[in-house]
Amino acid sequence: MSLIIVIATSAGGLGPLMRIVEALPSTCRASVFIVQHIGAHRSCLPDILARRGNLPVAFARHGEVIERGHVYVAPPDHHMRLRFGAIRLDQGIKVHFVRPAADPLFISAAETYGERVVGVVLSGANNDGAEGMRAITAHGGLGLVQDLEEAEHPEMPSAAVRRDHPEAPLTSDRLAERVAALCVGR
Image (tube, helix red, strand yellow):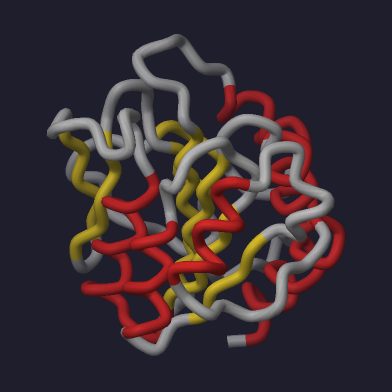
């Protein structure tokens, strides 16, 4: 069974996110899911990440079968949730005033995949990801957050630290190294 990596980012998180995606080796056996707070606005995030990384990157599609070694980005104005083997998209109520939000992804991943989940919370200016991180670690998964001093907007990683007890915060370079090692190590 492959690893499920879920990443949340908002204001100030594009640089750290690119470092993580760039570090993922072409031999990555994990499936990677990204939520960026973009609301209903157009996004070229998959194109940006695909040019920088070694793995295929695309907006997730409702009902899409999850594949190892792929990066899935929540599309504008849709929450992304995981069910066993597939992606579910919806336009349910906004969470923390945003859609897409990290908590629906993180919680669904934790409930579906348990200890196989790694959650990463990067820079952002609200509390999104904190409840999801708590769910991930409660189900035996691993929680990682960006260093609070490095994060341009430390509210999201700080909320995750306050709500749960993930591992010690890491700089974006160390996060990239850690996630890359995890995706080939399990």
